[in-house]
Image (cartoon, rainbow, N blue to C red; front, side, top):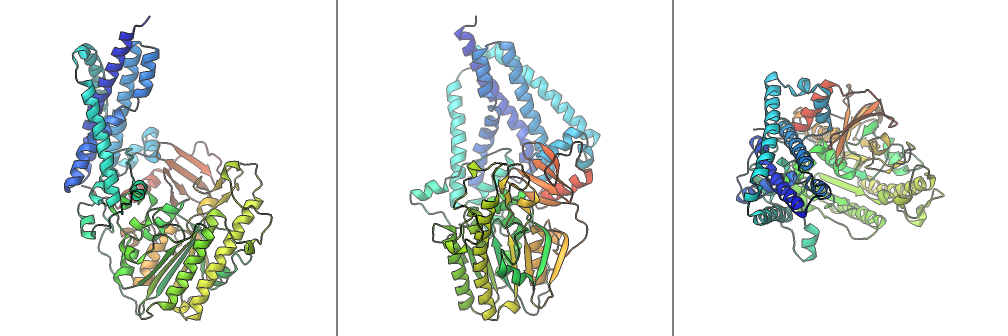
Length: 611
């Protein structure tokens, strides 16, 4: 029988072992500090001083609950010690690998890198020499030896260890203090603190914007651009852009429809847009660079992968497209049905022109807000100073919630509300598709009003008009139980119509692969005469570039995918890589091409600063 004293000693030993492992993790974590540009801001330094030790100690304690249960139910010293040593080795080796990846590419370990490491081709992609492998092997052996020595030493010295409670309280204080400091910095938009988070692997900072607003606090305005760029971890663009100014600048009107899938452009569904499309360029194989709004809109305006979102949000760095529009005196008519604070486009895409933007519209329903932004755009077009060019942006939302007025109940049967909890692979999709089509017809009518206002004021012939979606929408098309978006990377969730009307250009259809990453470079060239190679400020190319594209990069929260015409390679942050065909059937034995991996990793690290 095991006594209570045995269990108490095991708990004490586990606490000290995990704590000292946290110290070892901090030592390995110096790889991140060495790779990053350390902050010069005093508050950011204080944050890093508290967050760095508390985060790595927290990581070391992740296995503590499980080991505690084992120790209490089966208080065998050898078993608990062995499991604890293995957990410590796993953590330190993981940090060693992740720190190396971060040093090279400024992003953390993901499924693609992990697959390269485990498949034995990492050396080809990461350019790892025998010296690197030897160093890693020596360090891994050292980690094993240190863990075993530490475990033995702690058992011998356990009775002499004191001040466990004060140490625990200090750690908890550091954890709470760092998260509260980040929450404050996020609320007041103190960029030097928020951008520091990127170097910490797996760090999930606390934010309290809603709570602070509920107490009547108002978030501070964004700090000056000069302050934002000081100590930046980004290099965007990579060089000063070159321009040859056009003789007469065109206006730009961008209309984005939430969840507009690729096969829903036609005379029966969207007659007003279809009429404009008959005068425009249509890209039949156009992919959004995401299956959700956040990264879809981000990629369209920046022309870079959605994997950069968190870094650009942390630094509140706007896209060069909006920057150039502002520099050239474009009047701004930016109206979105859904709040521009969720996702945080007010701190990314439109951060440089927030004095011209309404963050949210009145109205509880999407259809009310959609009608409101239509009225505001028509009013803007009528009242603006026509001596200056303008940039108009409309983002319609009714298709996201499948809402529409009774007068647009054109397709039947339909449903009034979508309950996603009741949807499965056996559900009849027709009523849901009909509701979606009805909401799309409603949005099309609003777009028609705006286009009519353009025509009536003679503005259409001097305006580049872009109409597209932020991502697609699935209705169990794969028969796998997927509904909506943000669920997979199939064409139903990632492909969307793309229509662009150039004044004086004849209508055309394009059949090559194109992506939302190509929109910003194309507009930079056609609006401003930008002659700089798109790769210096984008991951995309020009929309009309029909050269072979080996893949389309599509991002979401915890994964990204590489899509070509035959297969989809899904790379998850948790460390798995899956390759499926376009119908989402697994392709066993398929592997990522080494050269392709090199290209992707270069693109994902291109705009991160390296020491």
